[in-house]
Structures are given as structure tokens and as C-alpha cells.
Length: 101
Length: 100
Image (cartoon, rainbow over all chains, first blue to last red; front, side, top):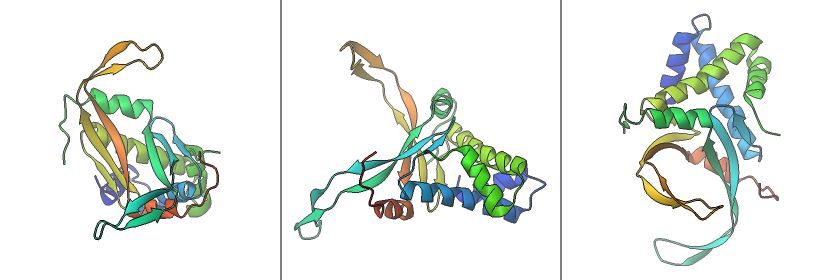
């Protein structure tokens, strides 16, 4: 499923809301989530999961083209921990559905 | 403070003028739709944010870290998020001083 398919699916369920509003709402939610993470805030969606930042300490990397050492500064990367309901639902249906790639 | 579904609902009310019931419904349905897809073995790609991927893990021997006891970890299917380039860059720009 892609973002536009998600919007389609929600628009079908939200028959009283114009398609445009559903699209705006989805984008608005995603932007709010991205903004929270990029300002260091955690996100906790009950039943779905939590998003937080993990710190990666500075390290010496290599330029893959010429092998030269480059100093890389510390940084934060987003981390997702699935919630209990999502974990259970996905695991319980593993025999029934193959992963579609 | 963590961002919650209530905050997202409030945000839709403030930004788009949806009424509270509509806003709550759409936030709930958005996460429910993603869960349904993943449950059916479909990965979910949200451009600009990331991709929720599924992985089948094989059974493996493990150990209870508290007691040191050997336990077997059964085969399982897990969800991981592969963060998109855009979000990765925005987060990297965060110069937080305190690791979480």
C-alpha cells in the first residue's frame, strides 16, 4: 500500500468528507509526526507503536570511492517499535498471508 | 512529552477545521488501515516518511538475559520501519544535546 492508496481507502470510509480533505488530513498528520521527530519528540500511538530517536556516536567512515577516511559526526536516526496489538496481529496472520514484495 | 493520537486529532481540528469526531475518526482509521495492510502481508510505503516492512524470522535458540536460561525463540513475523530519505535528513539536522 502506498500513501495515495491509503488516502483512497480512507476516502471510501469517510463518505461525508470530500476526497481533498482526506488527502489534506493524511498529509497533515504525517507532517506533524515528522516535525515531532525532527525536533526530538517521541511519538506514541497506542496499539500501533512508538517512534523515537536513537543516537549514533561520531565515527570514522570511509569514502567508498577512494577509501579515504572521513570523520562523521554523531547523529540521530528515527527508530520504530511496533506496539503489542500490531506485533500480535502481524505475527498471528503469518501462516495465512505470504509477504507481498 | 510524547505526541499521541489525541494531539494529532487536535492538530487536524486546529489546522483543517475538521470537527473533533471527524478528526478522531480519520486518525484512528489511518493507523487501522496501515495495520490491516501489514496484517495481510502487504508492506506500506509512505513517501516522505518511510516504509513499514515485514520480515519473517526463523526460529532460533535464545537465552533469558535475567536468568541465563536457554529458551527457544519461535519463528515470527515482525514489522520494521525503513525511514525515508527526507525524514532521515530532517532528523539528522536535529542537533539535540541529550541522547534519549
